[in-house]
Length: 487
Image 1 (cartoon, rainbow, N blue to C red):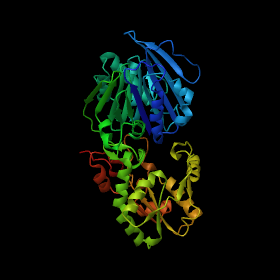
Image 2 (cartoon, one colour):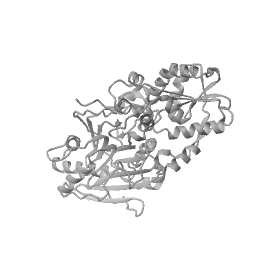
Image 3 (cartoon, rainbow, N blue to C red):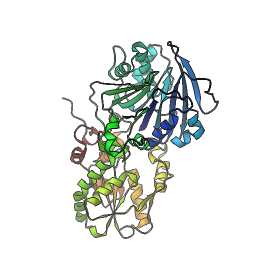
Image 4 (spheres, helix red, strand yellow):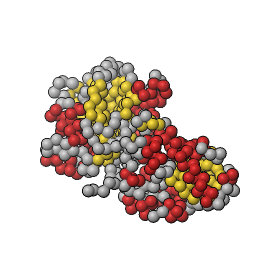
């Protein structure tokens, strides 16, 4: 998982006050999508004598094209969070009127998504490319230099450059990347990308979320709306839909340096993953008009009768039940459950705010230790209670088992019930890196077996029908529905 963003300022003559601070805030708003590394690349057109070069933290590359346009590129990358990567001075030294960036759950040298620059083209992407080796082989045949250990972003950037230098049209070039052209392979997978050219920024979605917010003097591209929404004072609840534009699968959007907007579409069979609403995205982000937190709340409300019935069947005492969300990921499911019942929401499972996302750690033992120090049960409020834990999903089951074990050991509840918003994930995403063998719902046959494995007294999941009622049918549900059989 990764988050990508871009910023462009229109018709600016101010060489010292560029877009780096805005880009920093966009990436900070995407921190939920990656905490292992971050990178930004900015571009300044025709720098003057007031621009200084600094050795050390910033890589500067001045280039001149055939039109005698001077472009200065500034790059910064580092392992860790956005704050780790970009100090105040670093941000000030990222010159430019245009910039792109990304955050990743992989370290810099392993990341497939962080921005990559090749000559005057820079590109960042979210998602997975299934045929990166095929693209690499094609580029080598065309005498395009490639690194021995190439990232997917590098392959995408160089293939885009291959088409761009022939057509001189960013939209046509990125369309050829997505669809293929003659002997050139098309990029296979589910992804979103932002390319930076001498003319401006181009955004493309092929199944991963990406949107744009255009103001009078600048525009944002971002994997999620929450970051740009919080930065633009002019954008409020009543006019949000006028400014935020979701780039739908098969849509390409270009914004030039003069503020001109171009949009084209092409056919793609990809749909946005329903797991974006269930887990990946921030609750305050809006995707295709549906706020993530609202969707989760509606699922919680729909699940309420099922949860209460299960507790009663297990001999539970509803008057002794409390609802405790599993950190922020379970909040809105818990709110929905409580809205539909008389149950009380008590945030008695605390989070150590300085802890990392456990799944970005390389070693399983370290992940388990991080989960233990991240989830801290209340000393008193759970003792003697039947605790209903609400969460977004159970994928492998390891994290939830640690939480339940710690809850029973430290907080001494009488029972632990679990309500999970997303249906059992039984199938690996064909556009991801996970294996079906790692999914607990694939390994175990029934929900009761999963409950026993993670140590819960009862366990209920959301259903496919519930999610379709909230999101509609124009989403991808393959990880819980499986794949249509080939005829």
